[in-house]
Length: 113
Length: 109
Image (cartoon, rainbow over all chains, first blue to last red; front, side, top):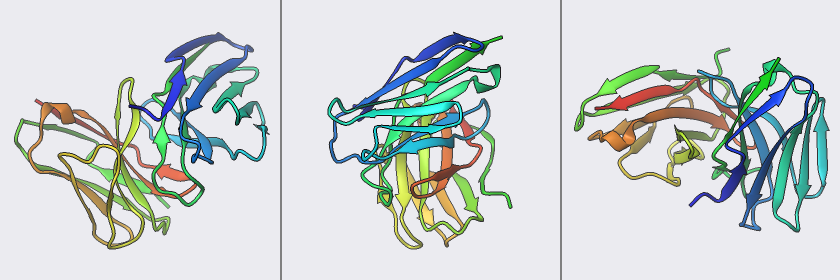
């Protein structure tokens, strides 16, 4: 049973639109929440990460929103571009120095021109 | 500076055959990992190594063995491959930030 639940499984957005991917977790010991981006034929690469001491983190067009009480976090991609088309994974671990990271099932994002 | 290198990129096995997936990193990470990626399941941790000489089971270790040969190399062995092990395998290094290789696509017939 996955410890991090991710939705939707796939998402189609028009160029310039906002892409939103949601994740939820149960284990309150999780306190580090990264997002990874994966292009076809490549390995995942870290996109952005957040810790629960802040409710939002923004890097360029990418923003993580974090709701500790609801045990949910989400990735927002503003002004989505065709080059953002990829699979996105949320993840969680019990601290920055913990080896056991749990990933969500992934969201395949397609941004149409 | 190659980062994390995996070999081979593709492999087809018959049920019962054995093989070793190789992984090497040049980033001087203490921690290394093996994941498998399956549709609808995301990335699942098979084994990890927190430092040279140590290995620990992850979420789905059954049917696999690993060896942390030295700080650079971490191999994954399938002793008797089964069709359920058809997957894409990723090696990674790092801790808070994990750096992934390009993957090995394995089919077990």
